[in-house]
Structure formats: structure tokens, C-alpha cells
Amino acid sequence: MNLELRHLRVVCAIAETGSVTKAASMLGLAQPALTAQLQRIERALGGPLFDRDRRGARPTALGELVLDRARVLLPAMKGLQDEAARLAGAADPPSRYRFGGVNSPILGRLVHRLAAEQPDVRITTYASWSVDELAQLVAGGRLDFALTGVCGDAAPSAEFGLSWREVAVDPIFVLLPQTHPLAGRDEVRLVDLRREQWVAAPGEGCFGDCFAAACARAGFTPRKVYETDVRGCVDLVDAGAAVGLCQATFRPVAGLVTRRLAGTPLRWRLLLGWHPDAPAARVAETVLETAVAAYTDALAPHPDYLAWLLGHPDFGAQVTVADGVRTA
Image (cartoon, rainbow, N blue to C red):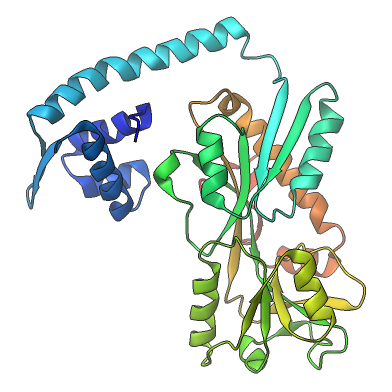
């Protein structure tokens, strides 16, 4: 592993708080994730950076050396970035946008909006089923932004040092053929689907575990779950071989219907991620607002869901110009 500035920030945070647990809280990370990251940093540097016991974490001699260098390097790098941004004309619009997406329901609309607003900007996209792959590409400077989702209160891995913001939060819907006995209902209880076979797209992170837990709370264990691409999911549901779980903004398909799960046992948080030290960070808020507008565009074909959102303010878009941005 090559040492990066984000690793030095971790070491400084632990020294400043005197505790890995407190540093994890300050950095917005899970304590096990930060501990694992510290261990990787120590392996890269050849020895322990902190003596840790019940009283906290105290720098070793090697740790003091690293801290001395970090306290010089981090401010110097920040100054370099600020000066470079000013010299390059940070207020000027970017010349390109590079997006990666994991089964994103708004990527197409986001690209359309940006292309209409900035016709001279070059926009490229990259698809992957792996959130970690996209995060690594963003951290390595090969992508500017990643669009992905997480289940419930989960968060993407902190390993790559990205900033993540919520675009929207939606309940998970079920995808049924129009001929299904439950297709006429406005919402469907998860337990009423206990005898069904299921289908899901890959690349959903912890969603499989969240789904299994929701089924357990409803009193059953799901039967066979097929895994295939989105088109394959649609075909299996259309053939009556399975029912599927889908996002609330899933585009209507002839012969199929989407229905809310009663009690919203599963939630999906749509996220936009970027690296805070990358040039893309200076336009991140603008891209975030455009992503929210793209999400709003995606709601247009779903008037029933729009009406439901009016009574459920915890769901829907999570960014407004007036209220600011809520951190994921």
C-alpha cells in the first residue's frame, strides 16, 4: 500500500483525539473500519504508530516522526491546492465530467441535464456492479463522481476517502406481473410474498442481508433468489417465474406493475460520491443539485408515488437550495 494524504489525516485524528474510537466518530467512520485502516498504515510504515490501551492511544517514537511530517505536509498540500485552483481559474466551469454508476436510476437524466446546461463540456460514463471499484476509480482520479445506493443506514466503504452525500431516500418496491393476485393492491405486505421466488440484480452491496433480515422480521425465510442483470430480472418477472425488488423510480414496463411494501421494511439511499481533494470537489455542490433535479425528473412517470411522498417527508429528495445539504 502506498501512503497517501488521507492516511496522514487518519494518524493526525487519532493523535488529536487520543483514541481510535473518538477519531472514528470525528471522521464519520465505523471504529472497526478505522482500526483496519490504521493497521494497513502501520504495515506500510513498518511498525506501530500508537501504543493503545484502555486509557487511549499514545504515539510511539515512529508515530511522533510521522506526525511531525504530517503536520508539515498537510497544510502545505492544502496551500498548494488552493493556489493551483486560483491559478487555474477555479471559478471557471469544468471541461469534463466523468461519472460511474451502479444500477443508477438517474444517471441518464443527470447526463441529459448537464449536457443541456453546459453543451461544451465532455461527459463520459462508466458502469460497474461494484461500489468499491467505482470508489477506487474516483480516488485514483480516473472518475470524478460515483452514483450508487446503499440499503437502510449502511454506508459505502471509507477505505477510499470519498465524500458521500444523499440525493434521495426511497422505499423499496416489489415488481409483479399484472396477472399476479396481489397486483391490484396499492401496497403489499412482505409476508404475503413468502411463497414466491425472487430475482435481484447484482451489485447491491449489503442489500441481500437487509432483505433476508426484513423477511426474518416478517416471519419467513425467502425462497430461491435468482441473480441476473436488470433485463433478465424483468424477463423472469414477466414470465411469472419470480417477483422482484426494485427502486421506487423504476421505469414502467408493459405487463408489469410496481407496488410499495407495507410498512416500508426496506429503504434505498441514493448517493453521490467524490474525492474531497480532487478538482471535481469544487463543483460537487452544483452536481449534487443537478442530481436532485434528475431524481425529481424520474418521479414524473409515478404520480401515485409522488402523492405518497407528500405525506412522508423522510423520503424523497434530500437536498434543497433553501435547507442545504444533509450528509449521508
